[in-house]
Amino acid sequence: MLVYPAAMIPLPGRRTVTITFAGLLSAIAIACATTHPHLAPIDDTQIRIDVRTSLLDDERIDAETIRVDSRHGVVILVGVVASTDEARRALRHASRVSGVQQVVNRLRIVPTETLTPSDEKSGSRSQQLQRLHDQQRGHYRHSA
Image (cartoon, rainbow, N blue to C red):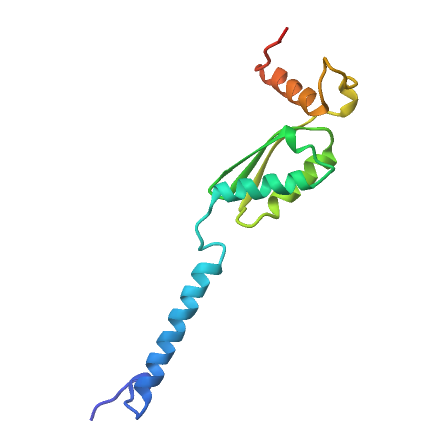
């Protein structure tokens, strides 16, 4: 006498049920692979664009002073901001973008009080912040 496991007992119509179940599992696996963020490929270019757009859309962030980089879903924000609040907002925007796994904060805070009033020589706030950042990193070249 042969003994079959419960799943292997030959019953009429059983083969149809097995094929349908296998098809259902395949469909679920394909759906998960295309919609699950951990299984989908990471598009760093799109992440950079989305983070940059999000920063530009916030009027309380001077996005001109922030550089955005992304590698394998890890976003790096580099630059100078005027306040802790501005830095927090930038980090929050970056972390909310689809595909971002982690955000690295390399933002420096330079209060606006340290900047000179904007005139033709000193340039805009963004230009002043960028010059301060460059000076502190040793990249500043004085132009005549």
